[in-house]
Image (tube, rainbow over all chains, first blue to last red; front, top):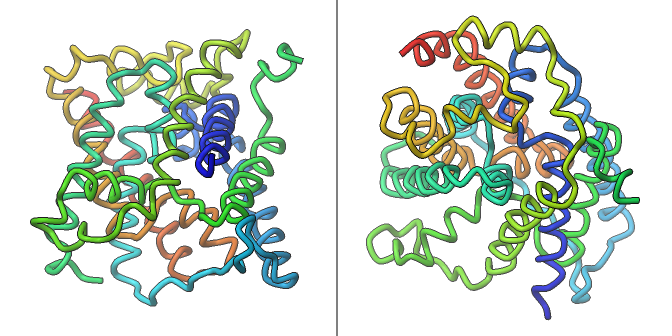
Length: 137
Length: 187
């Protein structure tokens, strides 16, 4: 039962990503061609509300449903890993037209070949794990 | 009601709802980041025996696997029970640009002639499906997160590393779209 709430939020997330067309390969192209405000509006407004929510949680010291304080971890300081990793990710985001969340949801949408995109992303994750010590961080 | 939610959701509805998803995950004791599930799946598969990066207690990440499983089911529910009456209203300029590299807009969520099993046997299809997926997985882990983890969670918490990552996402995405696309899609 502990996991049911995660399943329900996940289902909502999947419906949200489909109905907002975030999972659309064409919407991602539109974004990278600056032809539509749609994706920028979504990310921008999510960010505005996200900043507000994060601020409230910190100020009010809100606790999770399990009664533990909600904490935020500062990300390790670096430029190279975020910049180079980010560029590689961006190349893939534009090519496959999907970031990790949408990859899962597109499978549910009936694009079964996205199972291969997922498997390939897992292979990429494995390759990163294997090469981690030689990559700049 | 069904008719109302079957329409495409406007950006000013969708964005705040994405933030709500982030809030619910935080409130449940988790966090919002889809790509870390890929590391967890590798760990479940036993990659930790060979590669130390995957040697961690993945059981603590079970909730996130359940969450993305939900995202698959949600995609099915939306496509099956809440289909939009009209195809996504993609801008004419994008449709025109894509036509120049040989991709015609088919009104689907992704070009069905590229994202099909048989296109795996073409060079173009293989690069897009297998190459695209590989870059997403590799890059997300190197950068320590993807769109949900950095662009939404990280930036909401004013993390400079997330800002650098998002700038990287756009450098990569713009390079692919404007410089590399013409070569790949004319193959």
